Length: 156
Image (cartoon, rainbow, N blue to C red; front, side, top):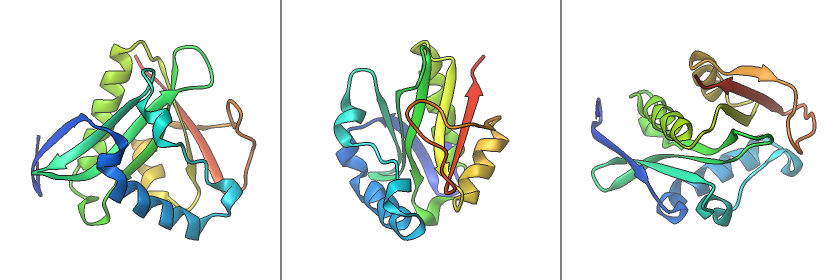
C-alpha cells in the first residue's frame, strides 16, 4: 500500500520488533491514566497460537502495530497494543493496520472485535467509531472504569 510516507507493508511480527512502539505507548498511558486503568497485555500473550500481532513497515522501520488476543466470548477477539508512531498518524497507517487485522480475524473465524481504550485517546476513539465500533459496557473480566471506554464491532 502506498502512503504519503512511502510504501507500507503489513506483516506478522514478533512483539519485540515493535518494542520501541509499545514502550512509547506505555510511557504515554502511564502519564494519562492511573496504574489500575492500564490494561496492558504481555508479549507472551501476543505470541500464543491463538493471537495475532501485526507490524506496519515503512522500509525497515516498524511504525505501527496491533495485536489480537481471544476475546471474552466465543468467536470474539480483543484488540491490544494498537499504536502508530506519532509522526506517522495522518497517513492512513492506522486504518491499514485495522483493515489487515479485521481481515485476518475473519479468516480465523472471529466475528466480534472488542477493545478497551482510554478516554484521553480521542484520535483512537474517532478511528474506531469511523470503522463502525460502538461503545458498549465493560466485557469479560474488565470492570467499569471512569478512564476506560469499551467498544466492539460485529464483522460480517
